[in-house]
Image 1 (tube, rainbow, N blue to C red):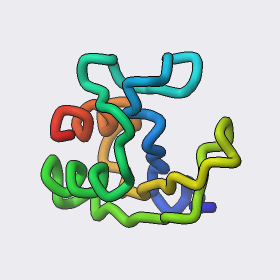
Image 2 (cartoon, rainbow, N blue to C red):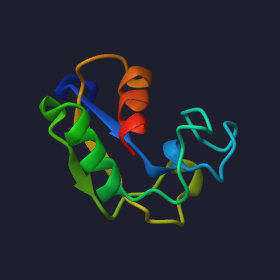
Image 3 (spheres, one colour):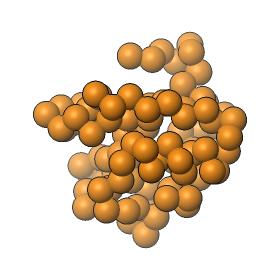
Image 4 (spheres, rainbow, N blue to C red):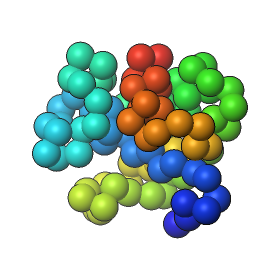
Length: 93
């Protein structure tokens, strides 16, 4: 698990999934969300929005709420708040 001291943000595909509610884990508005986003698509969007984020994919990970689904996650460098980073990536998805 990456630590805050390393300056990384953990981004799960569930944050961008339009099929989920905010209570279930979606972190962006539904109009910016997409159906079943993949870690690869999120990494490409992160790279397109800001190359200094340096996205890295961890494919064997799962969101704590959906521990049985190994959808993966993306690690990015922290340049601003997590919510601002998520919105910036969601606009490129």
